[in-house]
Amino acid sequence: MYTNILGRFTQLAWGGIRFLAGVLLLLSATPASAALLSLQDAEAIALGQNPGLGAIKQKVVELRHQAVAIAQLPDPHLVFGAANLPLNSFSMNRQQMSMLNVGLSQTFPSFGKLGLEGQQAGVEAQAAADTLRGQSAELVLLLRRVWLQALYAEDAVATVRHQEQLQAESVQAALALYRSAQGAQADVLRAQLARDRLANDISKLQAERASDLAQIAQILNLPEPPSIAHQWPNLPPPPTLAEAEARLSSQPLLRAAQAQTRAAQMGVQVAKRGYWPEVTVSVDYGQDFYAGSPNWLSAGVDLSLPIFPGDRQDQNVAAARAKALQAQYRYDDQHLALTQEARATFARYAALKTELERTDQRLLPTARNAFSATLAAYSAGRAELSAVLRTQKEVLDYALTRLQYRRDLALSAAELDFLTTEGGAQP
Image (cartoon, rainbow, N blue to C red; front, side):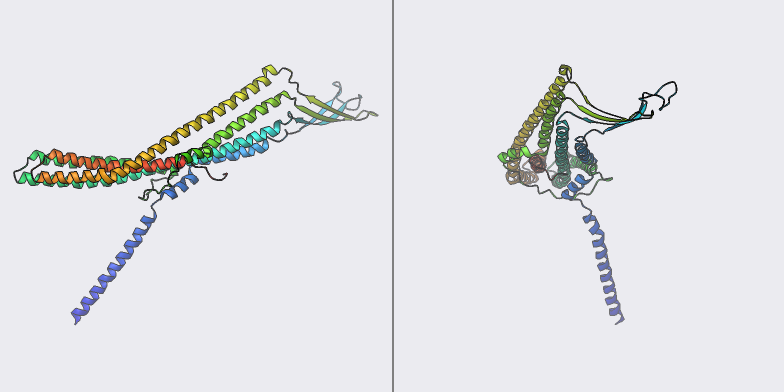
């Protein structure tokens, strides 16, 4: 009886221990899985914490403040002075016309110049905002490139490890033939060499993945490389080529170049205002201390005289026109470059999609079947080991090529998404 009770108590105790161990294991595994970083979260971190984007944001703020300040009139000048002061006594009441005066003057730039300069600065601020959106899209594209490379390296390691298992089968087949005196020891050594050589490939891929994670940490401004979720991103399908080319005009970097062209064209109008004079209006009041003398009031208008425009105004206008043409050429060149890139990327995407499907459906299955058939023939003494090693390498090559197609296909989709992005709201 006591034995049964003790046995039941022991069962309950072990059951409780297993339950507690399971709970502790679940609790210890939950934070690790929760700590995995997804690509979507990484993109949000990059856009919020990257110092390069922070600098451009402050540039936008700077230009917007300057657009307000540059459209204002210059500060007026307040003048204090003494006039007709005798040097022999410095007395203010012994000579007529000795006085203390106070004056105020205001300069008015050429007609319409301030308004044009304010508009020009506003367009430059808009160009900086579009540049910020373009740089943000470029940063997301860079992050996606490194992220996809890290995923490829991780899957490639798993693929090579699977290839090690296939090589182990070859080693076992060579050993079996050697032990039965039907194979040579050299075949065993060659099979072992082919298997062991894969360890170097794994080490290289692991080093590449560590480098990719370090670059991700740099993009995200993190002190340590993150643990990323092993999930290939589900990027939006690319548009047709005609739709992609139509969206290029709204691409943020092109919008920034177009805004810079408009700002440079406004600079021509600002330079033309130099042909008009600047006007300074001044008023002075003088206090006369000589008995019986009145106080004095002076007013005047000061005009600049642009009477020699050949060496100044004409040169400024010509320089502004050259700057406007330079900006227009830069926009045209960038538009052509993005159009060519969109066409090339779209063609590459279509080709990669076809190649991936062909590799999945035909090439890789055929290579695996060829290896199995060659290994069976070698085990039966009807094939050489070299044929087995060759078919094994073909399986590995097609498996890695398939991963490269998958990586490059996703990268092409990311590049097309960057080329056709229209940016968000004004930052």
